[in-house]
Image (cartoon, rainbow, N blue to C red):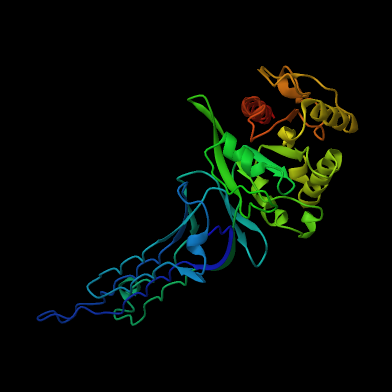
Length: 371
């Protein structure tokens, strides 16, 4: 089951109480106080693990608590420290304080283990309170309480490219064609009910991560459909690939503008991501029809056709738009960096798309590093 949000109460362990004890032994008439200290309460850690892809392990848990420290004992025996609690989460998980709404932690690096809550300190035994004026102290400290926090864990997928489009536009087919992901593919809307990640290989040593979310419809930012619930999963993506259906009854310009509007309503940051466009399902039309639709679309959004896409050539039968160098990163951000007609089923232009997206992602990464 895909679970990307859970609410929990998390507590660190209480410190153990110090001991009140006096050394009593045969032939030792004045042994004095020998109460040991209590053990520190267990701490709570978060561990980021790539082998965990959802928060389903935490579903149904209400309270996660570390072990309390053991109390001290006589003969200056210290109490055992409480066992720590480690909560394993997938990369991209954020921890939000439910009371204040503040983001407490952002867990993105594989393998990192981060302290979240310190355990309570153990109390001092009565041996610490002996003095010349108080040779028989009958007081020891109680252990300090642990810390309790109500949090919400939210998972946001980490990917290089996020696929955005209407339902049944071909996102699942595309990610299955380009990557190792095997999502459910069918000819009806909302086939994809949960986000999917796929690794797209480029040769033997290079790759990039692609994320597919359920389709976005008009009003998604207001909660319609499934897209709004999962838009958070493309907030971390470096780039966006907007899929426009050439065979859909909606005009391509309308699809494009609707997607941009819904992205903007959901997140100003997400709306400024550099993006590109793939026109899908061109196998349903003739090349002439596809070219006419693409040219009209390019005219509508103010772009000029160019049959060159970086150093990788698209099928010459189809009109495309792109740049020979730099991918036009100086272009206004609201403009797509390339437009390419594709068919995932017929594998038309899919290889050109694979390498073009890779170059696109690398250029954006370099620009971000420079800034």
